[in-house]
Image 1 (tube, rainbow, N blue to C red):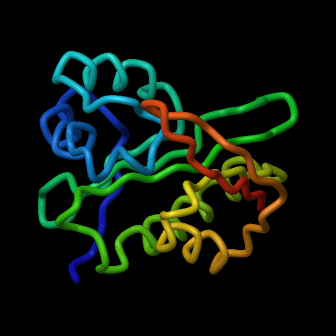
Image 2 (image 1 turned 60 degrees about the vertical axis):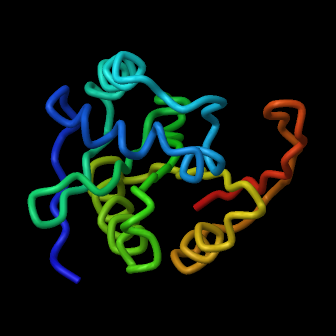
Length: 156
C-alpha cells in the first residue's frame, strides 16, 4: 500500500469523484439517492470546497474523499464522512485516512465533537469508527427508493 495524500477539494477532482459518486455499490452506503452526473459532482465540489473536505490521492490518482463538514459551528460539532472508489476498498485506506482526519480536526478545532452515521450493512465502516473510539448513541430508519435502511449514529 502506498502513502496517501490529502488535497483540498477542487474542481480538478470532478472526474475522479465521478468514479465514486456514480457507482451504485458505493453510494448505497451514503445519503445519495441516485448516482451523480458530472454536473452533480461539480455542484457538490462547490459546496464542499470551503469546508474541511479533502480528496484522498494515492499514486497520483483520486481514490476517495474524506471530510468533516460543520453540523453546528458554534458548538464545534462536525460530521465525519468518507467514500472510496470500490477498487480501493479492503486495503486499509479508509482507516488511514480517518486517522489523518481525526488528527487534523483535533489540531484545528481543539474541542470539536465528531459525529458519523453508518448504514448498518456497512460493517467495515462501523469497525473503522469503533477502532477510533466512536460510540454508537442512537439508531434510526431512513428510507431510500422505498426501502427502509437502519442507520447507526456515532459520536467521538
